[in-house]
Image (cartoon, rainbow, N blue to C red; front, side, top):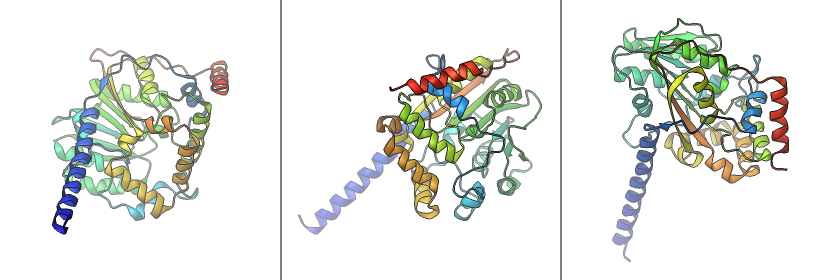
Length: 349
């Protein structure tokens, strides 16, 4: 084989890989923007999910432990992120020539004149993109003054259609039925009271409004106590509650949301997205983060089937047009807590 043939073969291989990679991401985009009916899930929680809701609830005095316990998220990432970057690791699609948050735009079905709430807005990348696509008013919530300043600089181009509130979203108190859509992209895991958080979303939504939640990791398919305990180590370090579609549907259904749709995409799928790979390199080689080292240990210590099929969940719920006041989701009693924990202790024995 001569040099020309070798070069042509190399070009063909590169083009084929490029096409295959983009085809995969287009399939992921189609899947995540066409969530399926959730009627078959969320009717009961497995013992690990029950224990998770008891043991993994963040405490009021928690702080983010992403790297150094004396630093916040912005202190850690600020040096490595420009103001146009997003903080989310899992975004669809990541096709060549595509834009981040296009899938979220499709899911929310945004139209001119709508009022939207972003809970845990990060750098405001999603909010700014959505507001640039159509004439909506968007309110962002963050507990970081640094992130708020970044958002305000971006929103200066929106002609007053963007607003930023600096507060803990567990303390948020906005008027009832004041938003057409609410979304939370990888932030619900920081709430200290998930039931109250979801109830506020229900209250703040107009009848017919949509709630979009995206969250990485879950215990939907956890079957071994070793896996549960391994992932608990990561939670203890990161202080993020990995809430699965099953838990969310379980709670949203009891609040009166309907219809509810969801999509689970496994670790290997969203782990191959370009945005995730960029973060992986950032965490591992530039930040040298302790949490990433812990993640590697968890992967090798846990069941590989559990880790690599562990889903990244998208849940889209609608508030009924004739919605009545939601029924408070009763927290687990001490007896229920003990029972759930005993099931985890017995599982796999």
